[in-house]
Amino acid sequence: MSKASGFHEEEVLGKAYDSRLMKRLLQYVRPYRWWIVLAVVLLLTMASFRIGIVTLTQITIDDYILAKDFDGLLDMSLIYLAVIILGFLASYSQAMITAWLGQKVQHDIRMQVFGHIQKLQLSFFDKNPVGRLVTRVTSDVNVLNEMFSSGVVTVIGDLFMLALIVGMLLYYNWRLALITLVAVPLLLIATFIFRAKVREVYRQVRLKLARLNAFVQEHVTGMKVVQLFVKEDRTFKQFDGINKELRGAHLRGIYYYAIFFPTVEVIGALSLALLLYYGGFRITDGLLTFGELVAFIELVALFYRPIRELSEKYNILQASMASSERIFDLLDTNPAIVDRPDSPEPKKFEGRIDFENVWFAYNDDDWVLKDVSFSVAPGEKAAIVGATGAGKTSLMSLLYRFYDYQKGSIKVDGVDVKDWPIEKLRSHLALVLQDVYLFSGDYADNVRLKDPEISDDEVKAALTAVGFDRFLNESPDGIHTEVKERGVTLSTGQKQLLSFARSLAHDPDILILDEATSSVDTETEGLIQKALDRLLENRTSIVIAHRLSTIEKADKIIVLHHGELREEGKHHELLKQKGIYHKLYQMQYKKQEAAGVPR
Image 1 (cartoon, one colour):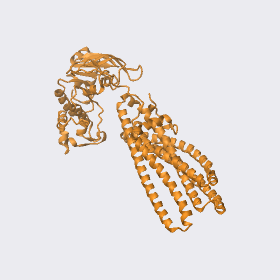
Image 2: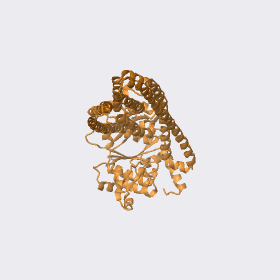
Image 3: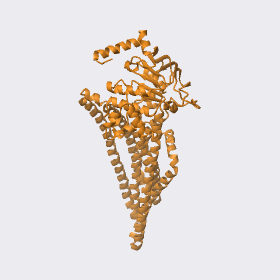
Image 4: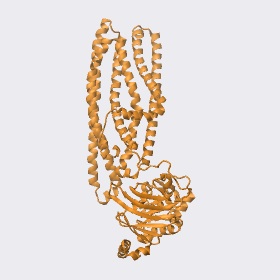
């Protein structure tokens, strides 16, 4: 399993720079490399213009202001204005290009991550919380956007700026330059200490934020339980504690920033003081002009600006390395269930299903299914019954190839499901689950699932076939009636009817009902049952049901017990055997009698 499955992965910060990760990240930039070249050229141009302004200032003071050449001063002012305008245009263009670049790279990475997640097997989602995967697609990708838009490219400009400044200082007066730069070691020490402190704070912020996100997601999703057991105050106090820890971590970061930046200013002021003191004597001695001293002052001010920005870039780079490592861990998690090369496919789909000595376990040798064998002929209606945990749903998960079995064979029309192209296999199947998931949108969206080949008329026909038309008649917007997130405004029965209509609209060759009527009222179940009697004709179907009354007319009933196939036959045949099915039927009949439900 990849590192992506580690529960405490948010605690790991990693190195500030990892050549392996950076090499992979730069692959996403390759399609836009010429834009990067242009952005770098603009950055270098901006740095040159800034240094050029300093040079113009020195020349203007020494050659025109002190010389009282006012005509030349006007010309220099116009040149100065032109350089500022050109610098503004270069800065604007560079900012737009890097922002655009960051958004493009962010889009490409996010599409790749989301597409990869869709290919992963269900067992991966059993072990990885949804909130963490959402964080990969959102927060972690956003961090990379910041690196590309304001990190890597601008670092090049900052380093070039520093090199130009040092060069100009040495050009004007190398002795004065050395005296001015004597405070740099102090700056390096302050930066090193700040970096170490902020690194730990950043790790704490990531950890506290991850805990806060997990807590919010869990308790908002389970809000019904929180309110049902009157745990609002206790939950609020827990949230307050986690939130205070996050606030404390952020405040510690602010504290270090509040110390570091004034420290840089003090060190800069120290350099300026030394410059003024020593430079004043050099002017008196005639070894330095007044314009050069002003240029020195401006260059020193410019020198400390990229130093501060490089400290910020360090944090961005460190965050980007941590986020990229988590993203690449996810992308490096290979799907366990994939198409085999040159997978065969029957020319004509008939709908025959054969389970042959199937063994399956979710974990090692903890077998859920043990040597299960049965067949379902084309057009036959088979029912699977058994106590909770008998392995009924696991059978359907294997047929859909959500999981792969360890031993035996499952064939559809004589071809092993492992040899079928996954998309083709599932296109012939339709599954109605007990726990229905609806998407935000409307009735039509939830039935057709964005399939443009399913028309509005076909949507209406599917809804009418399952008895949902009475709810449509009560809705002014018909099939375009809004459905809230997860269908919270619909009853359990309405959601299951929509799910059933969804399956019918896609016209499957094999229809699977996994306890689809177990949570609906008697009237709604009657609607579904009437639709089933008509719609399951000439269609292979498998019905998993707790209510045995719904499967009495099945062509074949398969009884599972502790993962083993114990009985098989028609309803009346199994009752005569006085076995497991008979006991289940009698127990359910007695419960119905006790509850006053007609048999």
